[in-house]
Image (cartoon, rainbow, N blue to C red; front, side, top):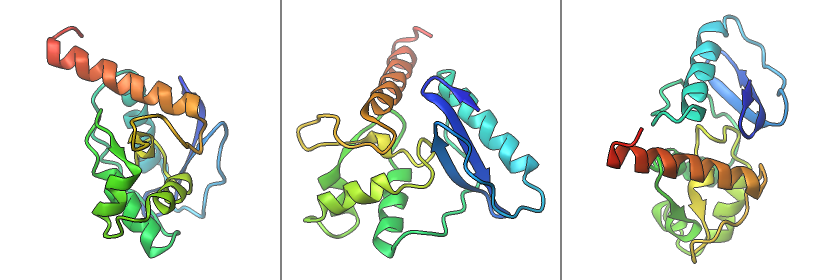
Amino acid sequence: MQAPIDALGVAVDDAGICRVQFGGVPPNRNVSEPDEVLARAVDELTRYFAGEDVAFTVPLSVTGGSEFERAVWRELYAIPYAEMRTYGQIAAAVGDPDAARAVGTACNRNPIPVIIPCHRVVGADGKLVGFGGGLWRKKVLLELEARVRIEKEFGLG
């Protein structure tokens, strides 16, 4: 699908969305009937990029990663729309307050960016650091969410 941050490839397997890839189309896994889940994912992503405060409901299929990485991804998924957390806050939330760098690595390995919002994680000083899709994409995503939140709070949309 085309998005303001370049093309997004969305892959599904029989359980749900298994990959979102910046700049291209990931290979699809063996799927019996992907159409409904894929269509739903594209619809939710399209609405997200159109400026809707979307709570993603499409089923996810996260099969890879270490136990720590999966814990980080679950914590990322729980970050509310237009809010941010620091790498240190995520590390503490998954039970290892000294693992901020490891959280950064887990964010970089996130197989389903945007839907699992690793872009909402910033440095301890609030600076935009590290993003597998490029810092410019992280900035665009955070600016989109901030604009939508402001419009919603002040009735401007």
